[in-house]
Length: 151
Image (tube, rainbow, N blue to C red; front, side):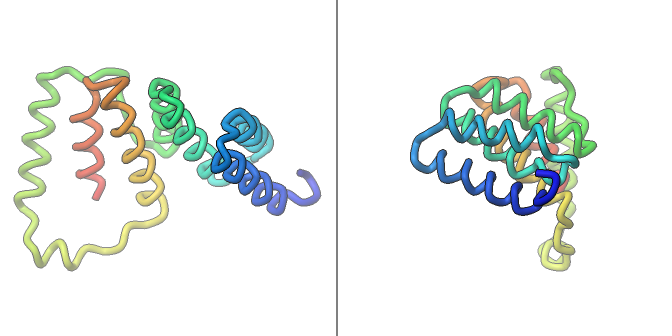
C-alpha cells in the first residue's frame, strides 16, 4: 500500500467488484473493508463506500446501507437529521414545490453542470432514498426533497 498506493487502490477495488459480480459477497465486503482501512482520504474511499452500501442493500441489510450512506453524506457536509417530524416534512415538501415551480424551462436548460461533490452527493442520496424506503420510511420525503433541492 505505501509504495504503490494508487495501484493498490485500483486493483483491490476491481477485485471487490469482481467478487461481488460473481456472488462472493463476503470476499467483496472483506476487500472493501481493507480498502477503507488503508485509504488516507475520503475521496479515495467514496467508491468503496458506495459499493459496500450497494452490497448491503442487495443483501437486504437496508439499515446497514442507510448507515453507510448517512455517514458518507455527513462527511460530505450534507446535514441529515437522525429523524424528521411529519409536520416538518409537509413544510419541506411545500418549500421544494415552490422552488421547482419557479424554475422555467429556459432556466433548467441554462443550468450549469454539477460539480464533482454534487455528483457524488446525489449518487449517495439516490441510494439512501432507496434503502430509506424500507428501513427509514419517515426520512424518505426529507431525503427526496434534499436531493431535488441539491439539483
